[in-house]
Length: 137
Image 1 (cartoon, one colour):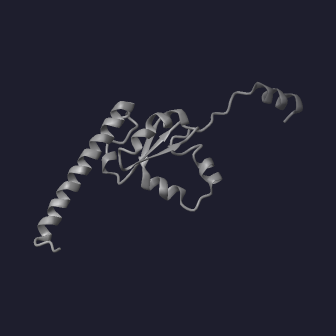
Image 2 (cartoon, rainbow, N blue to C red; image 1 turned 180 degrees about the horizontal axis):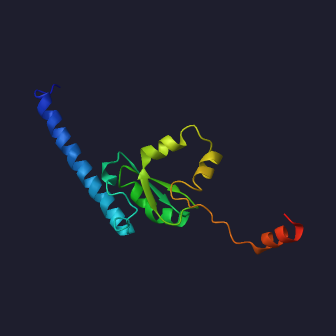
Image 3 (cartoon, rainbow, N blue to C red; image 1 turned 30 degrees about the horizontal axis):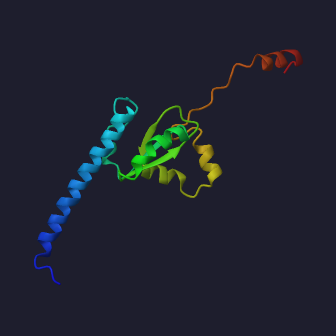
């Protein structure tokens, strides 16, 4: 079998690929709308320009709710960060560059302050002040 007009066939395939990408972008936008992400100020507006999107969720329960969409939407990945307060999105390439050549322990430590993790605020511990006062520390 021979294709007589290969250029025409390639153009048709490119048009179809562009339609598929457009529909997938609509799926991503719909998912973010459903999760209330597009209204938030901290969410980048150019997320559709990214090659792949990383969605960081704060718990496995939230992951279980939305991971069903992973199979029907291409270009999204999920990570659970128990140190996150809310759902965040990042460029997946940024994630790959940050975690390259790191152990699981190093990644867990990094996620305490990066990719949605929040710095733990030291509590006002009065007993430390008392200890310093009584022992002249």
